[in-house]
Every structure is written in C-alpha cells, then in structure tokens.
Length: 334
Ligand code: PBG
Image (cartoon, rainbow, N blue to C red; front, side, top):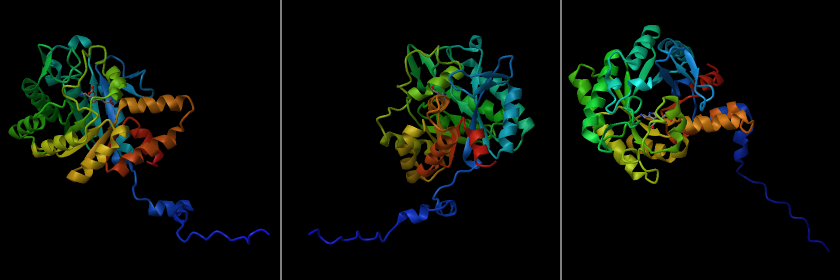
C-alpha cells in the first residue's frame, strides 16, 4: 500500500507578492535613479574638428569647445546637473611639468567659458591632474624617475585656481598626491573662491579599466611605467577610508570612488562611514566592456545601463559619473 499523500505545507511568507506587478514593484523600490544622479564626462580637444570618435569608446567623441557647449545644453535639457571636462591636447603642447595645465587660455578654461556662456545653470566640474599635459603621461611632476609629491601640489593648486577663475563650479583632483586637497582649498580660499566645491577622487585605485580613457585623452602612448606609487592598490579597503578621512579634513565637499562597478564595496563602506556625498565613476573600461558586449548582441543595452547605474545607487552613491549619462537620462524618461 502506498503511503497517504501528504500535501506540502503552504508557505506563509511569500516575498513574490511584492514582485507580482509593476505598480507594487515600483511602490516598494528601495532606491530610485533619476537624471539628477548623473554626471556626464566630456572628452574635449583642441583639434580642428567639432566631433572626433574615440575608437575604444564607441559613442564617445572628442569635442571642440563649441561642441562641448552643445553637449552641455543637451545635458541640461535632460536634467543632468553637471558635466565634467577631460582634455585631449596636442602632443606638441606637452612637457615634463605639464605647463599646459596652468594656461589660463588653455583648452579647459576655454571650454568652461563656452559652456557657462551657453548654459549658465549647469554645474561644470574639471579634472585636476597633470597627466593630460605631461609628455610622460603621469599625474605629477617627474624628477629622476620619481613622481615628486610636494612640487606637484603647487602645480595642482594653480591648475585648480585657473579652473575656478574660468568659472568651474567643482574642481576634482584625480592625481592622488598627498595633501592636494589642502593645497587646493588654501589656494581657492586665498583667491576669493570660497564657494568652489572640491570633489576629491579620494579612493582612486591603480586600474586596468582606465585604458580606453588614456586613449581618448592621448596619454596612453606616453605613459612610462604605471601609477602604482600614487594610485591605490586594489587589495585594500581600510586605506580608502583613511584617504577619504584625510580629504574631508582637508576641505573636500564630496568624495569619489574610482573605478566603479568592481569597487562598490568601497562605495558602501565610504558612504556609511562618512555621510558625505559619495560619488563613483563608471570609468572608460567599464563603458568599453559593456559596449563591446552590446555590439556583439550579448547584452541588452538599455537594461544593462539601468541595472549597473542602479547598482551604484544601491551601494550608497549620491551620483555617478558615466559616459552613458545622456542615454540613461533618456531611458529614465527625461
Ligand atoms: C587622470 C584621470 C584618469 C581618469 C580620469 N582622470 C586616468 C588615470 O588615472 O590614468 C580615468 C577616467 C576613465 O577611465 O574613464 N587624471
């Protein structure tokens, strides 16, 4: 005789009820993503053409100042609060100390002015570092084969001052020298720029994922060696907290974790520990990796974009720098 059939007990708790239709999923969503969360990095150049495609970053273009102003207008129309500027200058302009970084009539000041003329209400952020202007591709001053910290600080402080003077709202040191936030903050205070924000790339790791960017700004060919004596070792997390604590003490208003997707654990720890706006950068390699899969039909573009950007919000980000910014804003209905 077969044993009598005993029905399985009904589950009393059914989490699937909260997933059962779009309205309830929307109602109980813990995080939201909006165009206000997005910052659009723009690669700008001093070449003759308005838009030159970057081969390793399909869909990204090197823009003239005029085209950058148009992009800023587009961003503003989409509800994106800020654009960032990353320069590609002619190799003939580069030297060992990065003289071009402090040229008040250089490419970045010109772009800041063009954008502020066209769209006064958009935030403009600039990258403070020497790598786009040095013939060795490093972020600091090179002496006897070493990146020397303190002489670099003077250059960075002057660069930040020049950007603020041209109208930048946010200066973002990405160089990872010790003491740069303090040097920049003091230079800004001493020159009447109390209201200029500092977004420090506080936890910036030495990463393979910057490859396509170095292509885009033309620093890849020059780079001698690697950046491991100043950018962080990806084995570490406590060190990120120490860097962030120092930068806040030195006057940073916001901090950044970079790269993004492989470092969301760092975003989580930083945002929980410090309670200051924590941003992250979905960098060029992350963009290129996704674009390559999308081009092969292996990833669904729209869904992958929104899912990765939600991941940043879930980890505790106040904002995300992403080359997908305008596309994401459109997907969000902007
Ligand atoms: C350097 C800088 C880098 C990026 C922004 N600023 C690259 C580097 O440190 O070599 C990378 C951005 C990206 O990969 O999208 N000042």
